[in-house]
Image 1 (cartoon, rainbow, N blue to C red):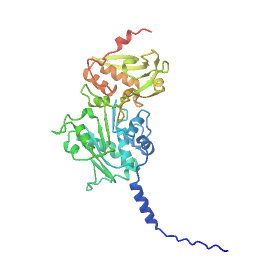
Image 2 (image 1 turned 90 degrees about the vertical axis):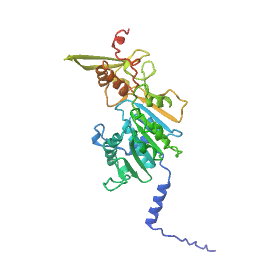
Image 3 (image 1 turned 180 degrees about the horizontal axis):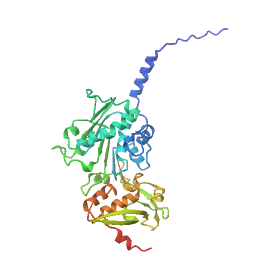
Image 4 (image 1 turned 180 degrees about the vertical axis):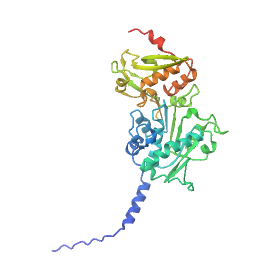
Length: 372
C-alpha cells in the first residue's frame, strides 16, 4: 500500500508587504518595559557644551529612584526638592526623551518664564536631541518655514512637546496633555495672568488621561514654598547615609560638619580657604571625611510610606558628585553674615526652606563648646 504524498501550497508575500506589516505592528504594540534610567543609560548622549561628563550618560545612584518613579505602577506624581548641581534638568530631559522615543504622547514642560523655556530649548534640548540619535530621528528638523518644529514646540510621530512659561495662561490652558513637567515651581508666577495658580492650571490639562504623569521639581525658597508643600504631601524620601560605626541613617547637613580654614581680610572684605571638612555623626560622634561618607551605605529613607501615588524626594548638595564639601563650606562661610547670601545658600545647597528664625547662621560657637 502506497502513501499519497501531501501537496503544499505556498503563497509568496512581497518583502515590502512584510515590512509594512512589521511597521504597523510596531506602531500599535505597547511601549517596551523600560524605565527612564534604563532608557537614559542605553540611549542618552550628553553634548560637550554641557561641560560636565560629556558623552554617554551614566545614571547616579540618587537619580535612579527619581527617574524610575515616573514609570512605577500606580504613581501619578513625582516631586523632587533638590539642591543645585544635582543634575535636575538632566533627570527631566531623560523623562522627556524616554517618552518621545518609546511612548510618544502630548507633553508639556513649564518653566518660570517664557524666556526660561526658550533658553532650555536652545541650550539644553536642541543640543541633546542632536547628539542622541533615537531622538534626532524622531523630532522634525527645524526649518524657518516648517511650523512643525519651533523653539517652543517639538513635534514627533505620536505626540508633541510644548514649552511654556508659568506666566502665560494661554500656553497652560489650551492643551490636553499626558505628561506634565514643571521645573523650578518655587519661582513660578503667583498667577498665570488672571487664570490662577499655574501649577493647578497645568495639572488640570492632564485629567483626560488615565495614565497621566506629573513631575514637579525645584529648589525650595521660604515658608510659602510650593515644592515643600508638595513634598510633604508625598512619600517624603530623604537621601541618607549610614554611619559605619553606629549604623544609624542620617541626613547630611552643615549643622554636623567640622571644618578647618584660614580667613584673610583686606579692605573690610573677608575671604576663606577651607582645608579640611569632616562629618560628625550626631549619634555616636565619630568623624568621617567626604570620601569616607560617600563610600558608606546610602539610599532613600521613606518618612511617609502610606502615600503610594505621589513619590517625593529630597537631596541636598552634599550628595553632588560635582561639588566638593570644601566648596560648600567656603560658600557657607562667605554667606553666613549676609541675609540674602545665606538665603541662597540654604535654598540651593542645603535644599531647605529659609527661615531666619530657625536656620543656623553661625555654628562655630556651638561647635567650640562640644566635649569629646
